[in-house]
Length: 140
Image (cartoon, rainbow, N blue to C red; front, side, top):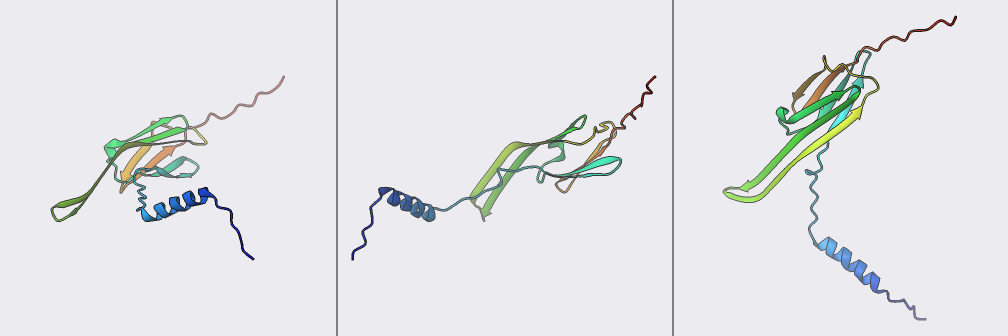
């Protein structure tokens, strides 16, 4: 008994696609999708934010506070040259802006907030704004 198979030209195109894919070098470079990664901690008096922004000068980082909304932006300038002796083999550059905004559970006192940038990590200390105590009305 002979097994017959139906010829489908799409199968050849599919095979050619993967054959070409496996023959070509694949380049996966994640330096262009830099994101600001955050850790946010809270205690009774303040919020502490650690934001990873490696390879950025502190003058290129901007933080804005509006009530309970915090925004961090930075100018990123990455340059990488790979040399073999005097011959330049590869040169890569990335210039752009990264931005991250988030909302906290309570308003922040922007007058006493502090920021410190060390070893690629921005540390924000954001004291909570004193909330007015609610007043209970007596009903006559």
